[in-house]
Image (cartoon, rainbow, N blue to C red; front, side, top):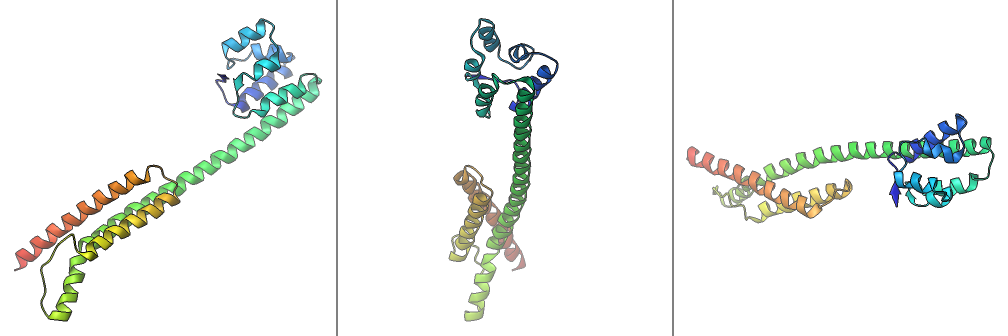
Length: 207
């Protein structure tokens, strides 16, 4: 299969221009710059145009059927059907482009939310010993200086961060989710350890 060196819309538009300039359908192909050379060589040797078109890989395969249906039509009908098809292709491509643009904006927003929530949850997880120690202080009257990252509360925040990122990654239709979740684990632990070191040094300095 050969590929065009332009979009299907531009291909049809260039064919229309050549036909409007008075060229016939076969001659129009020779005047295009985006047609594969082997296609033109085979056409010059006398192979059927419609059969050759089936060897070109169009983004819209119905183009081959279009040329088959207009092969014996008069010029006004050919131009009308080519213009209609080209307009439909252009409208579809514009709709796809707009959809992709909206999706990219949506993905950027979710990415920002994901980073912000990742950092926020990790920071809260880093300070989680304060909550545990306050509970111990309320129940026993003693304030412990514990900064373990293996506490149930600390591990719970890690799971919350993973679940939150998994949900946002699925929502934005990201690829390689497991690899991204591994990065989340690493970042979460790094942030938590940094806060715990600061937390431990602060209490050591205070005491």
